[in-house]
Image 1 (cartoon, rainbow, N blue to C red):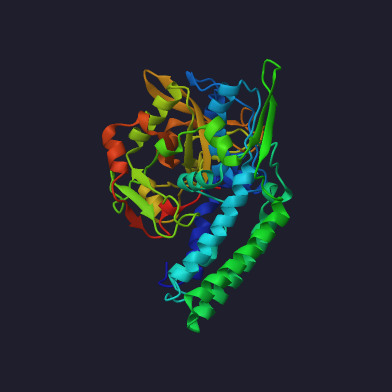
Image 2 (cartoon, helix red, strand yellow):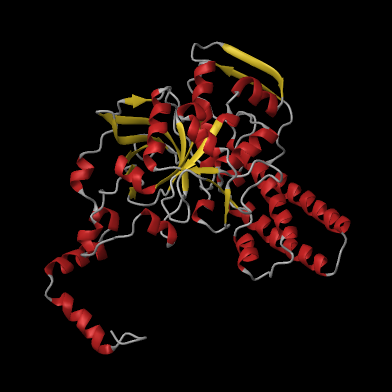
Length: 446
């Protein structure tokens, strides 16, 4: 190939190399007229799909749906908490209000963004840091520690108390309006700072902005409850009522999930993130002065061992992964051998996990829940996954993840410390190394 350009001679050569290749023509004919996932699907792998597992968490409740929003991390967490909650109160069906947490996460993220703008007024507005902050100031996505911040500050409520609005079912409009305002307010605050405005003036201006943000939020979501009564009928058809609750007392008295005893483990096999070290990410969070995002980087087998121990103990596991890779949404399967892309295109895909992370090909994109695992001679072969995309895909909303897929595209779990060694728990508490805001470990789950 000619230096700096594609020559006409080279184009002819490339074209002629395909003329006598029947496998190319067959692939071209199939892909130009068919869906790539169907054409490349490995029938032998499809025939092996099996939704039975040697270890299962109970009860298994109906799959939920985040609709057209990026609330997967909230759904996965609420699904994690509702299983022991349903056991405790003998419930056949139940959901916590994801919309309630979504409301306060949005509000807190708006405040967090404006505070970061004030912290970075000495940075160029078109530099990498401020440009990063401005790219997506009000993402739907989140991390485990961000969830902990919202629940600790605001509690939780049943979905019957604060149901979905149009904005929580489809967040596009609220995100558009608030992002428009936040970027406008970022310019206002930076302009005031440039004019040597006092800290008092900046604080008062930001307060006015947050009052306006709150008005916009309530317009879209409704007013979150301060007190409520929770009434329900258990699986034995017995009526119960708990009166005069607040979201925080409901969480503390009735849910009582051990948020403070959870540990976040990640698998990042890059040289820049050595194993057995704690990490955080600069400018990543939602609640000002809240709990910082923190991970302990461990090898993937450590993560698996802890997840298996939790499932065996009838406790599901919140996790984050790169869901779009080697994944069939309708069938509900994540399997590195499910598509024969290499044979179809006569090529090889050779990036390993570290390479994919370093070169922008893979990072955590979605959070779900492990509710089962199949063990053969003590080793996992496949995992049962509760998703939040409704009941139409997979096994009524439950998916299969092969263990090989776990190795390649799993990034994070949040797990109770009792399933970890003391050494791991101690390492988790060490001072974390701060990664840059654009590091792959700063990705949010949608």
